[in-house]
Length: 249
Length: 249
DNA sequence: CGTCTAGTTGATGGGAATCAACGTAAGTGG
DNA sequence: CCACTTACGTTGATTCCCATCAACTAGACG
Image (tube, rainbow over all chains, first blue to last red; front, side, top):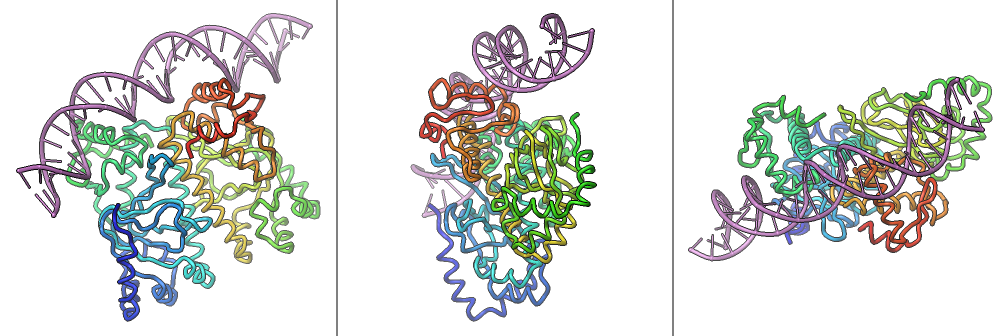
């Protein structure tokens, strides 16, 4: 078992008591402000939100929220990658997504989290009490609208992934994953030929509905064919067109 | 090609002009009012919404909305079953869900529908202009909240289905589908031993990520083992516990 | 240095896809 | 009314993609 969040955040909470000015400044200079739900807020509301949000910094493989836990905290990712997964009773794991900077985690219908979220690499995030956020939303309809758009967007992503899991072959799945990941980072202003893959092959496999070995073999295959090059913690795309062809839109 | 909705609705629109009182009455006596998004509305708002909503009645296999179409209409299902699907460029189809009475169809992030929706059997629904609905929502925050809950609920369903598609065996998929369908109808006040399946085996297969033959074989297998009985347009559950065991949580 | 995790590659087997045949029911038109 | 067609469902035979099992390498770390 890996560490939990509590130990880190409690120390931070104590620090925050005397540092709300600093916290506010962090929001104003937040690198993903324009990409996150905070983009919906005016300066005044942003300052108000910053007063109820707590910056957290997480080591790799730390659990933010556990499937089934009461959802009294939500997160906005600032940097790093967070893996979202669900378990079957016998231990089989399905990764349902990767949250990147700007993404929002944790809203659910009832009061229990629908999935587990854990950091893949070092992650910076903003933690907000759920009730505080909901009270805040009462007076910030723009934020409520933004969260709804967010949910609709996540739903569209989920539907696309159902097509992948239900209909695509192993190589189509891997190619699609690489291209999706690339375009998500591109929107965040990242480079484009290099695709960072901080997660393990197992994580990718559990996301794509195939085994570790299949992910490895498929990537090796692409490398052998000159479509890409395997590099530490990622790939370098050599032939984008063929990769796109392999993904089968 | 099957018929489109336009021909039906235009005639109805003409009729509606002189029948808004009837329309309003229909909302007040709507059988799924308490299950649909309309449950969020007070009598006054319901009457107001009924003025912008148009009842429609659809024959089987009629397309309500097409993937990619501009999303200027949304629907609330009153009776019947609607199949939601997405296509890959080469024609492979993934069914991403079935909308039942009380379900809401059509909201998306941008202005294009993310999926195709077509009636499975005879369907009654309420059609609402998207822009009219969004204007209405400005003055009905309860409805906006309800739609957000709805989106979150759909997202949770989608995530569960990703687990099914990514990790479950064929027989687990079929068993899960039957139980899910049963509990959805149960919430609508339907019986419980008989599960209605108005969709084709092909539809089920495309939903579960398996072929027609596999669905057929799996159902026959359950019938042979005495778990259920195949009846026209459905199954009769004989051994609920074993069906639940076969579904693997 | 031993241990552990992650990744790769090879050999083998299995579960579901594919290919194929057949039965049934509902139209359709002569 | 009946031959003909078409859609749907079922079952059997065969194939194949990927899972499984297994061996090995490389890097991280105490």
